[in-house]
Image 1 (spheres, rainbow, N blue to C red):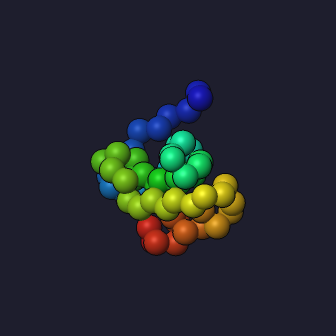
Image 2 (cartoon, rainbow, N blue to C red; image 1 turned 90 degrees about the vertical axis):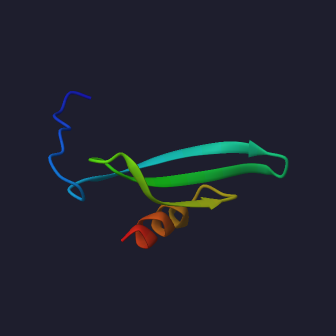
Amino acid sequence: MDRDVTVMASDQEWVAEFTYLWTTEGWMYVAVVLESYSRRAVDMSMLETLTVQLVADALLTAM
């Protein structure tokens, strides 16, 4: 991406990452909300299906 992503203080920008993992019980989908300044995980959620609820759970509990 060609954009400036410099963050000068904490809690100015959050980003989300999504991934999936193979487990012995099948696929597990993970959404993580990251705070850009510290690069720390604010919250995460996991579900067995990739749905809007996965993202909503991570964002709502992060707030």
